[in-house]
Amino acid sequence: MLYFPGNKGPYATRGRIKEIFLSLDWGLALFFGAIIVVTGPTVIGSLLKSLYLTRRLETLLHWESIWGDVLGVVLSALALGFIVPTHAKTLGGEGVDFLLRVIGGVSIGLISGVLLGRVLIPWSAKLKDRGLPGIISVAWALMTFTVANLFVEASGPVAAAVAGFSLSYSRVEALHEIRHFKEQLSSLFIGIIFVLLSASINPMDIVPFWPGMLAVAIILGAVVRPVSVLLALLGTSVPWQERLFVGLIGPRGIIALAMVSYASFFLEGSNTGITVLMNLTFSIIFLSGLVATLGSLPLAKLLKVLVKDTKMGLLVVGMNPLSQAIAGFAAKHVPVAFADTSQNTCSLAESMGHETVCADVLDSDLYEDALEQGFGRLLVITKNDALNQLIAQAASVHMGPEKVFRAHALDSDDAIVMETTSAAMLAFSRKFSVPQAVEMLEKQKAALKVIDGREIKAEEGVIPLLEIMDDDNGIRIVTGEEVSRGKALCFVPEKT
Image 1 (tube, rainbow, N blue to C red):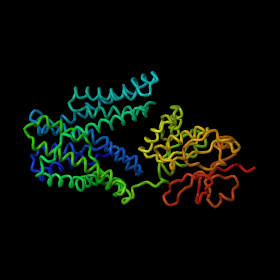
Image 2 (image 1 turned 90 degrees about the vertical axis):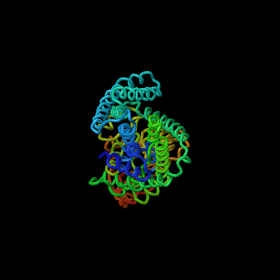
Image 3 (image 1 turned 90 degrees about the horizontal axis):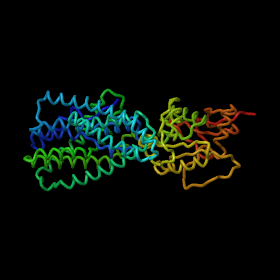
Image 4 (image 1 turned 135 degrees about the vertical axis):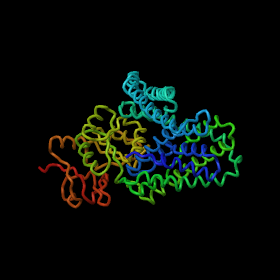
């Protein structure tokens, strides 16, 4: 279920609170209620990379951060009509405008996304320049935004968002590079906007309003938002702990301050009101971001919404009968996805029902994205030991060496062909060889079976691979010469 806490009832509630505490007119209060629903996707993205939250909770936070920006801009454009005479319309007219913006934005966005994913990106890929798809995508997004606004005012954010979703659905090969380039630009421009807008604010001009501003900020963050989230998710399967976490961790986005700055151009005669509005918006952005940054980890521990290591998603590199069997078993306990450079291999994995991440497996940025998607562990299990070491080294940059596991892919009497600085964990055992195991599985000279830990010692040649954890039904990748304590998926050679 997708939801956007605070985008309906709290829209008016927030405006009413501001009118009471700051004695500003209803129009400005309503405008504030519209813009303050804008979330901070940059802060949320950083949190999702640093905290291993439940998959459902990550999904809720991720989608709110995306759609919050879009809906916030559309709502603020509507609310502008209540404070700017030249934009004023009847309530019915505002409702018609809202529908036109949504319908127009969705229509133009779909057309734009299809053209980008099926024409422009494939064409740019032929030029063999890895940086070109990202540049083309950003330029096309700006064009989509502009064209949509020309047809229907303020429909640009919706059109750009829908175009992005359409591009993502098309699963083009360059999607990873486009996403990484977009994130770099976002961080750069958001930083610049934040500095420029902050420089225009002087809180000393409105000292008498400080108590009211603080009261509004606290009530919105500690009362209105948590209550709105709890009500929005009422009747769903989301536990109260996750609802409370989302309610208390809600960083507001810099786009809200940009919208206030935009409105100030039309309200030159309302200097005090717009000054208070800018300072209030900035204070809420600052305080909500501070709470999210410093309080998310302690709150997640208190509410027990952190995912244990054994329940983290597992990203698998290497497509062969052994990895397919391991992934199929692991998927019964934790989220599993295959990562591969080849589009054909990704398609094969998808046909087997697995999620895929199709990108250069030697690019460390791939694993940064994997963390954001909830895959906190990596199992490298190709038949090339040198490749396994290189992939493990690249992944350790973002995932950490303790979360990266590589299987041995050399015969026991072979020399190590290379050494890297990677401290990745050795999965399974040094006696285990991926090429040999794959060959034995293909010739039906071995099988993968679930065996109790006490029986493993008595079985000669049996190598535990994944241990099933009794406390949380997660899985632990058995490392080195370690012996499984409970039930485990094991590689069992055929007895001769």
